[in-house]
Image 1 (cartoon, one colour):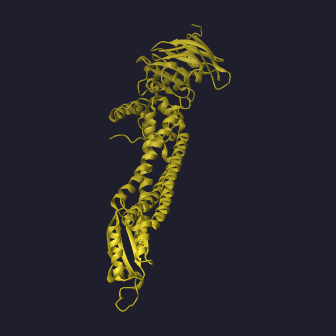
Image 2 (cartoon, chains in turn green, blue):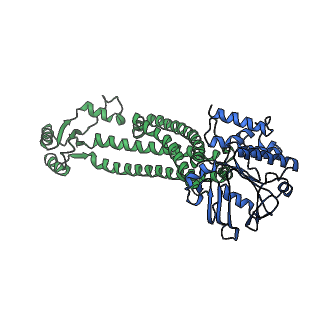
Image 3 (spheres, one colour):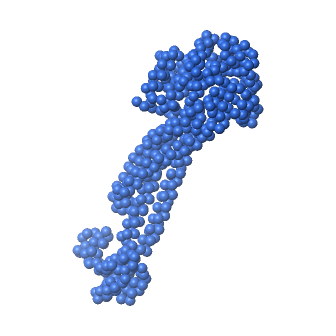
Amino acid sequence: MKQLRKELPFDTDEVGRFLPWIIFFMVFLGLLALAITLSVSESINGWNKNLSSHITIQVPPETASSNDLQKVITVLKSTKGIKKAQLLDSSTKLTLMEPWLGKRTENISVLLPEVIDVETDRNKFENISELKLKLKKVIPEIIVDDHREWLMRLISASEKIKAISVAVLILIGVISVISVMFATKTGLAVHTPIINLLHLMGAKDTYIVNLFQLRVLYLAIIGSLIGSVSAFIVLYIFKTIAHDIELSIYSESIGSLNNWFVLILVPLMAIVVSVVTTRRVVFRTLARMP
Amino acid sequence: MLRFENVGMRYGIGPEVLRDLNFSLDEGSFNFLTGPSGAGKTTLLKLMYLALRPTRGLVHLLGHDIALTPRSELPMIRRQIGVVFQEFRLIPHLSAFDNVALPLRISKEREDVIEKHVKELLMWVGLGNQILAKPATLSGGQQQRIAIARAIIAKPRLLLADEPTGNVDDNIALRLIHLFEELNKTGTTVIIATHNQKLLEKLDHPVIKLTNGELQILNNNSNIL
């Protein structure tokens, strides 16, 4: 059986207690930051895809005849870049009003506006102002809601949240690398007498580097596992709460399988970064020894 | 085997502790290195086992000009040198077995071969029943024998011992020297640093004498060679 390498008494130094905690926090915070980034990113894409191609047109009650409405539909259908223009029937409008009026709407006599759902081809449809002018000539009180206006403001805000999350992720990575560097340097300083002895017996730098590398690999796996399990528990709780309060920005996007694969990369990256950082620091330090 | 040419050594900006050393030792020779405390014996040994590089001059060791040898090749030279340190430098958390096995493990020897050789050698130095003992539980003499076993386990071409008889009585000192002589008979070049005058008088080996950083090579009758 291959002898377990134990030349350096790692159990006696503080690095063994310190490093798994660094990696735990790195993975835990990294996973949360990445989950936020992915959620915001997916939500933006979803809104962009679904809403930016729709325009809602409202005609206040008792301001237009069915003839005028038909003229509006005709204008819309003749406009370049409009794929579909559909006047919503009463039952569809009542369904849309359910959050406010509830399901039992048979006996409610509320005057609802006429609503036309317009689907556009984003590549061809450009000039909303021109369309508004044309429609106001038919019905002056007509209201044209272009979702793109508020969507762009929302996307802009979401992009900022995404940028902050990415910055936090990078910051976590940088701080972790620095922490691993200091932890490794401390370990090297503590074990210098034995390292010198191993050198004098003919140990190559790679022999000593491997001792540190194996140790850090072991500690990084422990820290990553605990950090991942903790983060996934927190994310699951968030997902459940988000689902319960119908916060689709979080609950839908985080559940996607692709996102879980991306999230699993965080602990793997933490292990790789820790091992590579340790390797580089030990090699550079040993190169200065005789 | 070993040649020093105009070698000088200083630590930092301090005075030279070794000055203009010129000497050579043949392969398979047995030499004592002596001199008063502070004469530079340990520094000279450190130059020989490549813990230090000279501040001037040339060191030729085991066929290599050390000044021209890249750092990456030093481990292979060091594996041919066994060192018994004055303070033993055993690794405290390792057993006697693992301490002695270290040079073989560094050389990536097979574990079954290591086990066989280490056990044999520990038996030979009288520590066959202490193979799992940690250095702290052993006496000074026992630790010294482990240090010697570690230095010779890989059958080095050059054996350097810094005051190996410093902590033992004259009888044990003599036995240790005989152990080194046995090793010398197998072709290992041996250099033993000591200021045990009785030992130098009893044994018929050349003596390298260091005084104030300068060197003389004497025969056993204290004549300059």
